[in-house]
Image (tube, rainbow, N blue to C red; front, side, top):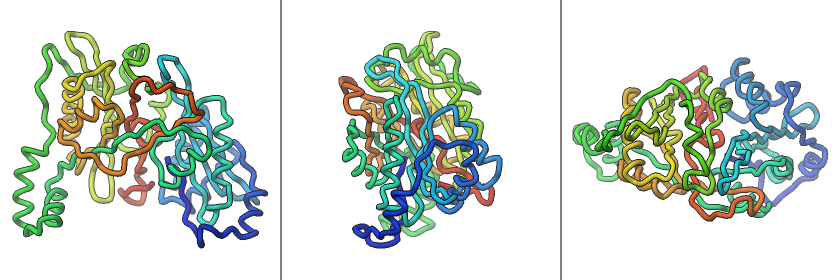
Length: 375
């Protein structure tokens, strides 16, 4: 989730025109009648798909799955804020939460207060609201608005393409290009390549084509997590039914004939080649050995797409250790997590945040005009 806008002048200046826009702009819930305005906003702000099919999927189909507010003035959309409503367990209590994303204003509107008014509208909703990641402005603004920082989630990557590793070797060690490529072909096939770890006794991993039936039963009272998102079939169907976000897959992990966990993977195109991500890895009350096996199987399953790199995100200390055991590298900075209102969660147990939150499973959008990122 990001709040961003290109400043058109010094940040400490507010013109009378800007203040007038702040006062006169209306913050309203999104309705289908507003789609042309939102479409105009999107095409001014982002390099995202621009077809009727994309706008119908992105804005109209999820109307029942969350909340969206827009800032409107003089027949123009000045800003947006979206959310998806997801079922959570907070301290074992079933609670619907809103995960916010696409918090943006048009260039020139930064400092007018429109972004704050959009978020205030979301904060007035009855559900707790969760923000994962975002820009430095987001991290500074949310605590001032009364949000509670509850921790962070680390973004990890495993680089598997030899040419990417060779470029890094040339950059950091000034190794000749031909030598770097040869070395990294050997190294990537051995040290860096995902490989299946030792399978636990009676362990079995099964690929499936849709959200596994009965997976919600794994969550029980929270599975040892104080804050955890439970999968929602309707949200999952909307996310995966997209030609702009790549291909999604599911894995089910069983020990001794009993399902112990599941994973969701994604492969997608970028301007520099295919990439992949571990969208979700979850098991109740896991240990490092279990998560290490699950991560290794999920990463190995993605190799058929020949990705340049595999992404993951984790807040859980056990999952973080499993990613490190599979040679994933932690990137900086980490992604702060904020919760509204304060006290919605007592923070007695760890929380579980992955790339399955907000719009992370969707970005980057593949544009029709090119295979490059559209976010």
